[in-house]
Image 1 (tube, rainbow, N blue to C red):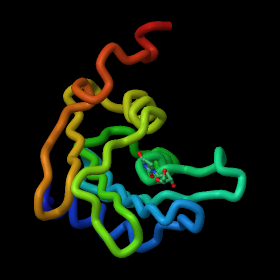
Image 2 (cartoon, helix red, strand yellow; image 1 turned 60 degrees about the vertical axis):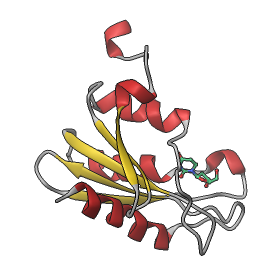
Image 3 (cartoon, rainbow, N blue to C red; image 1 turned 180 degrees about the horizontal axis):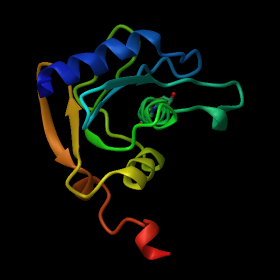
Image 4 (tube, helix red, strand yellow; image 1 turned 90 degrees about the vertical axis):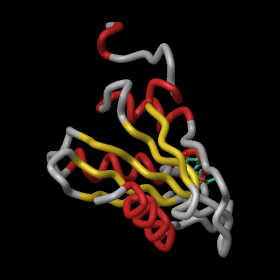
Length: 133
Ligand code: THU
């Protein structure tokens, strides 16, 4: 699967976003080392703090299916009917990614037409991991 295809999968995942409070649809597509694809969307809640981001939805789906080795994740966001040029993963999602992925893990951000690859180390330097315990 190409980076472009992974970005398109993240865009497609936005279709299932449940976001009646923010109207901000986020999709994530997580590629495993074994070649499987897990998609996720944000799932909001009337008790706002219970909201789950798209990235965590994808990661928790994968981990709950026995996958822990990941190749890359793509993230696309934007208000309903639009695609934002760039949607960064929130701090909590970066921390969850750091639980399972090394510093060179690839994170694709932007739109399917115009995106850039970052590493987890770039987005979450000096992270707190099990190595610190
Ligand atoms: N959101 C994500 O799904 N991923 C992020 O990393 C940033 C924020 C969602 C949460 C909420 O449903 C909406 O975007 C607005 O914050």
